[in-house]
Amino acid sequence: AQKITQTQPGMFVQEKEAVTLDCTYDTSDPSYGLFWYKQPSSGEMIFLIYQGSYDQQNATEGRYSLNFQKARKSANLVISASQLGDSAMYFCAMSLNQAGTALIFGKGTTLSVSS
Amino acid sequence: KAGVTQTPRYLIKTRGQQVTLSCSPISGHRSVSWYQQTPGQGLQFLFEYFSETQRNKGNFPGRFSGRQFSNSRSEMNVSTLELGDSALYLCASSFGTIGFGGELFFGEGSRLTVL
Image (cartoon, rainbow over all chains, first blue to last red; front, side):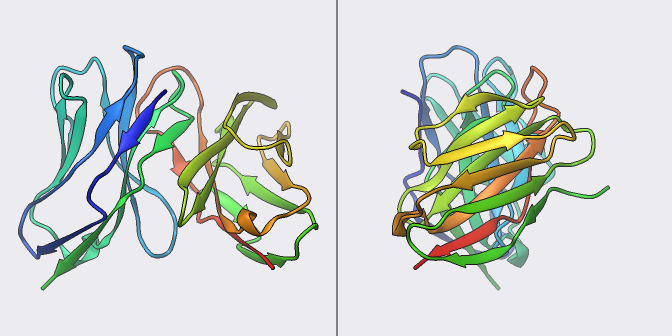
């Protein structure tokens, strides 16, 4: 069965520092997509970054990068130069179907950024 | 460009009642998926509709159902409400075609409280 594990319930970081949020996954399907979403206190889910299982290079989107280690089945999110507005819940997710329209989510990590 | 719109945003029901939630996807999107978010279980996939057909279904009892209309708007219904159905229900839309890419856009959710 497919599974996403986020082992860090909460992380604390100071402004301008980098932070890594951990995510491991389990699937027997050779083709899959990995996603990171941010959920502020308002509740909406904001897409951050995507990595396909066949992508050779790690994905990057501005201050976000995904450290994809396929052999270890890990897909950690790295946020560089943290900002106060980064304080939110972060979810790692994996696609359940080829279209990437059905996702399985981890339990999430709460990130708190202080000045 | 209007985002994903969910109505109502908040509602309170009592056990045994039923509830219908509505989701209007982004214009042009043909896929609508639904997720339940609770503190205990986290984010769980309910089902996905594409071109009026249910394409994927999560592991939820038959009390949870949905449908999609020809204009891609979707509704989900929960019958015989239980206390455990109290949750934030999130709707997401996408073009829904084959291929990953993170093009899943979420609404702000409908927060259901069952008393």
